[in-house]
Image 1 (tube, rainbow, N blue to C red):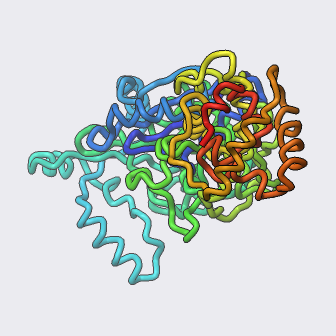
Image 2 (cartoon, rainbow, N blue to C red):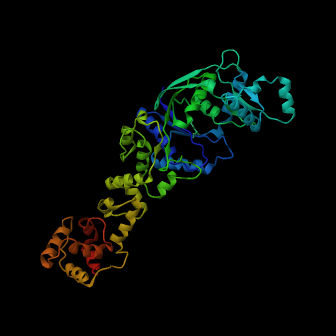
Image 3 (cartoon, rainbow, N blue to C red):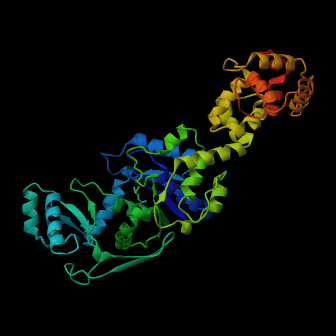
Amino acid sequence: MNTTVRFAPSPTGHIHIGNARTALFNWLFALKADGRFILRFDDTDVERSRREFAQQIERDLEWLGIHPHAVVRQSDRVPVYEAAAERLKAAGLVYPCYETSEELERRRRIRLSRRLPPVYGREALKLGGEEKAALEAEGRRPHWRFLLPNFRDNPFETERTEVHWDDIVRGPQTVDLASMSDPVLIREDGTFLYTLPSVADDIEMGVTHIIRGDDHVTNTGAQIALFNALGAKAPSFGHHNLLTSVTGEGLSKRTGALSISSLREAGIEPMAVASLAVLIGTSGPVVACRNMEELAAHFSPSSSSKSAAKFDPAELRGLSRNLIQETPFEAVEDRLAAMGIVGEKAERFWLAVRGNLETVGEAVDWWRIVTEGIQHPVDLSEEDRDFVRQAMNHLPPEPWDDQTWTAWTSVLKERTGRKGKALFKPLRVALTGLESGPELANLLPLLGREETLARRP
Ligand code: GLU
């Protein structure tokens, strides 16, 4: 069967680097297997889901280099879940429950005080038809639980029932279905919680591998049981470790902490984000990969460590800088053009400045310096000013190339006896308005003789 994966974010906020990790694990997994990647919005919680967040998530993935083969919204697919729920009801595999959350909490405390595991005791399963009718007459609406297959004949006598899977990331896993409560699949208002839509869609969409954060490990046992209850074989599972902030807190979609949008706005390169999101917390080194194919070659799901990995935004900036320094012109041509950096000088300009940039956006500052003139008043001593003025009289004739700077400064060295900083700094300040920046050997031919002369202080 063709490999099919899905990324299933709930559109309740901006995705952060930890969500990007899940998306990228799936994307790279599909890329390596020549498979399909479905973006599936887990938006059945209508109160918290927002269309704007879904749109932003699509844009963020696109920016990262993830191009889904299909985009679906679970809110458009409710009839599929209703049909699945009907099948489960008909087979007696879900049952109506009427407890309020206070009642459940009270029972949970009693169980804990009796040193019993705080799982749901299936009390609602004992209700007879008349009792249910009476509760409904009171105005109570049922929520529906999935009857976990953790008993032989009597659902009130559960027994250890192991579910095993060979996790793509964590290796062999076991959960005991008797250690958990029957999960609620349908709320009182008839809306679905995440579990049933997720499994129903995974079946219908032919998902072969479910790759997600390890906060879902315990859900997997019940989900495998639900796949089977719906007559399907469960797909393979992989649960990767989560990312935390440097101080160890979990990342949250709601706070917007380290959101992909904020990293993009800060000018971080998408492949820097992708490289770190994938390679952090694995046994391999974190390197800045130039494209998805390169990152795919470094990606191995089973090399993730089992504990959470701390994510340091400072590391991102370093990776981003490394990438920019090596980015060929063709790869940034469109972005530069959007900033007005166009024309015959654009390529040489990019090659001259890329080594000095923190972000591609900063190129525009250098473009102004090259094409419009210095942006700050020149701060030179009288003596240095005289030196630069004289130096202008010794500018070589055009054509200029990357040897012109050495030719010019060699003459100046001979004539004035200046060398090192005393020789170079006044020239740099006069020509760029700044004390540091890209190699002047590369900038000078971009300025040309006429413009250089025009910068005589
Ligand atoms: N919406 C769930 C989450 O973001 C999806 C989990 C899953 O992939 O099954 O955690």
